[in-house]
Image (cartoon, rainbow, N blue to C red; front, side, top):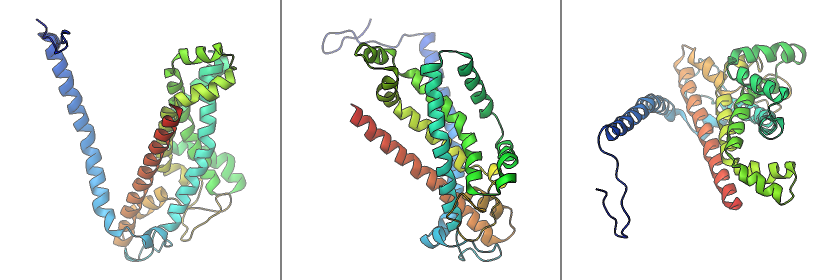
Length: 297
């Protein structure tokens, strides 16, 4: 018999027999999967932090890049940090608005017509394109005509970010209840106003998360930058629209393949710096999303 609570209502109990056993097995498998996934992540973070924390300092983050033969305490990764922020910011400005607009068209305006099906198909195809192919594509249509630059790198990273933003935003807009749209239409609001003031704010948390996922993927890509920004700089290039540039993923790749201990130590420090930048972006996005959701209530 079901137990009775203090208020007199029957307390729901888990059914006995095979259903309870299946529930426990499923719970154990989920916890086991979580442990299996988290163990490699913990080892990666531990290794990067253990080998990179000793070299991290303000001087390391702001100093010019030294030759590989110099010891670890000489120079830093300042130009690569600046280049990463410039290129990632430009790629975000390019990809996120276009991705959100594309998702809005797919979910709110397309209605299953040929154009919306084509956009959805191309987004799925672009999701599986290797990053090096995207770098070669930008190299052939942009770099050969206008030269290496941070903008070319931003185009390549933006092309990688675009399908992620489209698909994540589209899925979040599908989760917005239709009753919100219908209530707004009943008050006489136009479709564009409903989309801007009701639908997008309702899915803002998921949209920001999807954009953050795209930024995190783009910030760590190396292959597209090999064909677009050239690299090899020792000083910062504050102009991302002209001239070669350098970024943390490329610097990590160069230092990791170097036989010199100083360069390898700077590579570990660069990897930790890149992880810290992604972590700061994630915390900032969560904070902004939480405050935005509070104001919407």
